[in-house]
Image 1 (tube, rainbow, N blue to C red):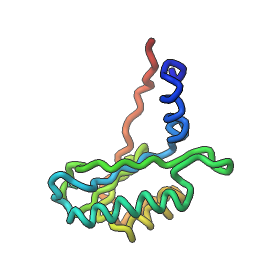
Image 2 (spheres, helix red, strand yellow; image 1 turned 180 degrees about the vertical axis):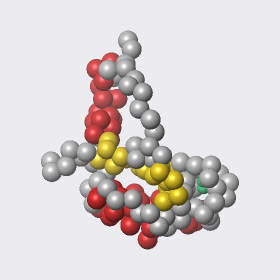
Image 3 (tube, protein in one colour; image 1 turned 60 degrees about the horizontal axis):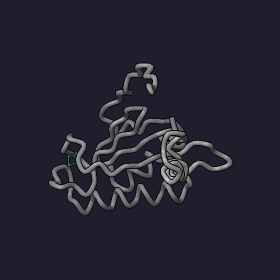
Image 4 (spheres, protein in one colour; image 1 turned 90 degrees about the vertical axis):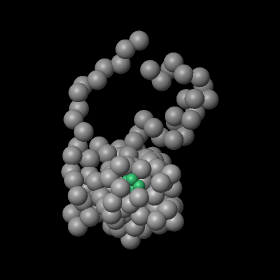
Length: 136
Ligand code: FES
């Protein structure tokens, strides 16, 4: 499937580590209509998440760890209360009040040690798998 895209597209896929993603973190930030927290607080949370994933080298596969954590600023995750709202896939763990302090706990406990931060998790719902196959 990867062979079917242009070389520069393949470079992008490789440099982002898309094929090595272990977890994908979405956070509502820089909202068009900030409802769950102040926009400035959401941007502080987003900046912290990005910085810490980079500092911990979780944002790229390494020779020691062949997987990575991808992060996406999601504008609004539609919960719209007690934000910033953050969700970790494929685990399907939804967190509220994702301030930098809480994000650090999520990184240390959940992302690095597979432990849900129960104090801030309000739902655990992994997405079902359907055994999807590729078509030509
Ligand atoms: S504004 Fe944060 S979830 Fe909607």
